[in-house]
Structure formats: structure tokens, C-alpha cells
Length: 457
Image 1 (spheres, rainbow, N blue to C red):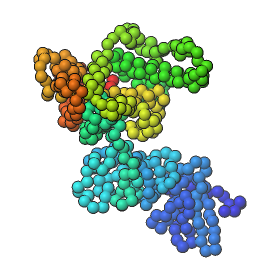
Image 2 (tube, rainbow, N blue to C red; image 1 turned 135 degrees about the vertical axis):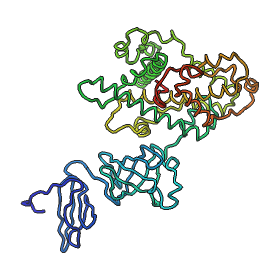
Image 3 (cartoon, rainbow, N blue to C red; image 1 turned 90 degrees about the vertical axis):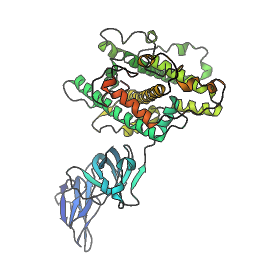
Image 4 (cartoon, rainbow, N blue to C red; image 1 turned 60 degrees about the vertical axis):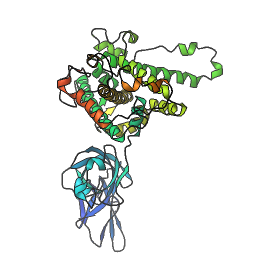
């Protein structure tokens, strides 16, 4: 292009010229049905040779490439149902997109053979990373994908191993069932997305003047305002986390030989996290009462269960159990956890919000395991007051059969029976059932529809 020629500016998908022996598609363009189209928003550049012209498009600022039919793309699965799965396209070839595009992978495009035997839930799961080929568009604003080639399909599958380790840390067998972990994973994902949605509504009301796309820790704590036990539990977690961070910072700045006493470490003042925010919403003064003034029965019973379970463990089993107790969603890392729960691109979570959300996900797993053990307790009752099942909202170690087996007190290795999918499903059914909301072991008042009542809030 000569200097005196006028610049030609194009947008993605714009038809530039006819594709023939003279005009050849170059970088930033693609050929379709005898025409050359632009992939980028930028400037058209013509490179003339002896008998041909190469049509190129160079972006003005950052890349804005779009997928074209025939391209190999990298996408993340976000939603799966019986007929298709929705995807978020992240890369085209080896080029990372500046913004994701929506894609859809239909059941008939998963593979080339046995299409009628495909089960989408067994082929893909939310969070999976796939390679797919872009097909001609049939819907506006959505790219149709296909994995019906040997080189395409799932390249990174989400693993339930972390959830299985958490289940073991909460008292399940050392080898929890994979089917049980999948059920818990689906519930946790559903619950976290519901929590984010409710926190977004709170953030919008807090912003009042305009819609807020940034979620802070206060938006999630506001959901816990009606359950002071769970609120104090997460505040205690944040407080200990802050003390550990401060102590680690002091030890990094000062060498151990320079610290002659513990005054510096004792000088770390315990401060209630989000104290100013809690003072604003605490009209009765209950939220800021002394944390030790109220007993956390659920937390205490989890500790009792952990102590009884470890009585018969040898050193190897105990080290494995101790490692499982340390597993949490916070260990995933901020970006990995965000990809796992598939946060909407329009919503941004602060660092504190990610910390709180990961803890709520951890508590959701714990709550499901607690309720599943409660179902097993009803099935394995030995003795006790018939009203006992109406009173307790946690496992009673004195009437739960595996806990009073003599092997636990004589050091013999007895394998704990893993939680089954039927026990977990029954526990969730009871928790979400309006008919059992006022009675039974799950005495929670709720007349909401199924799956709307949160486990961790």
C-alpha cells in the first residue's frame, strides 16, 4: 500500500474482496464461499507480488480475532444438559482471545459414531477444557462446535479428587466413592453460583446509583447475618488467617536471632474482620458478641467424630487423614477456583470475596457429609430416646453404630463404609423438602423451592 493511498479500516466478519487466483487470504483474514473476510478490527494491507496479492489485516491496538468456520478453538464447558453443553471459547488456535465467545456443542456433534448412545453428563462436565472445531454458524452470536475427530475432545478434565479428600477429612472412608463425590461437586457448584447471584443483588442495592460488577466480602457476609453461629465460624477463620499472615510477615522481616522475646508476636492485636461493616448491620448487638460465649455444636461434633475416627489409625493412615484435613478450595488458587465455578465475565470478585466464597464451598461439603452421616445414623440406630432424632442436628457418637464398635477402642483397623450416593441424595432431599422443614433431623424452616435453600448460609 502506497503512502498516498487511503487507509482501509475493517471490522471482524467484513467481506473484503473476491477470493481467486489473484487475491489470496493472508494473516488476519479467512476465506469462505469464494470471498475473503476479515478476522480482526484493523487496517487492510495489500502485499503485491508478481501475479498475486496477499490480503492482510493488522489490528490497530490489541487483538480482536474472532473464530471462523474450520478453526480449532480451546473452550471451557460451562453448562451441561442432556441435549448440548454450553462453552466459553478462550483461544483460537494458539492465540488467546481478548474476550471469550459463546459456543454450543450439540449431542450429535460430539462424535461421528454411535450418536444415539451419547450421554452428555458422562462425556463433559462443567470446568472441562476441550478442543473443538468451529462449524458454520446457525444461530446468531453463538458458535456451533464439533469434537467428532480423533484429535479433538477433552484435554483437561476436572477432577473430583480434592472433594474426595475433603470427604475423607470430614469422616468418610479413606476411599470415598467417585459417584458420591460427583453428586457433591454438582451441588457445591450450584450452591456457589446461587450465592454469587444473591451477592450480586446485594451489591446492586449497595451501589444504589448504578449496577455494581465488583463483589466484596461484605456482600457475602450479609447473607450470613441471620445465622450468627455460621457467621462467627467464618469470622474466626478470617481472624486466624489474618493472624497467621501477620506472624509470617514479622518472621520474614526479622531474623529469629533478632527476636529475643515474644512481645512482638503478642503485639499482634486481634481484630474482628469486617468490624465496621458488622457494626452497621448489627442492630441488636448479637453479631459482635464474644465469639466464645456461644458453643458451636456442629463444629464440636465434627471434632468429636474426627477424634473417634483416628483412634484406630496407624501412622500411615493418620498422615493420609491429616493431609485430607488440610485440603480446601482455597488451595486451588484464585484463578483456578474462578474457572471451576465459572464466574460470569461481567462480575469481578475481590480477594476477600474469593477467600470467603472458597470457605463457603468448603462448608457446603462439610454440611453435606454431616447430613449424610445423619441419614446413616437413622438407618443404624441401636438405642436411645425416640425423640433423639428430632433433637439432634448432628451425628450422635454414642448412638451411631460404627462409633461404639469395640474395634475402635482396641486399636484394630476397621474400614469405614463409604458414604453412598443414595445416602447423600436422601440427605439433600430431606434438607430441601418443605414437608420436613419443621420436623425431623433437618429442622430448618424453609418453604422455598428445591435447591434454593443454601447449605452454607
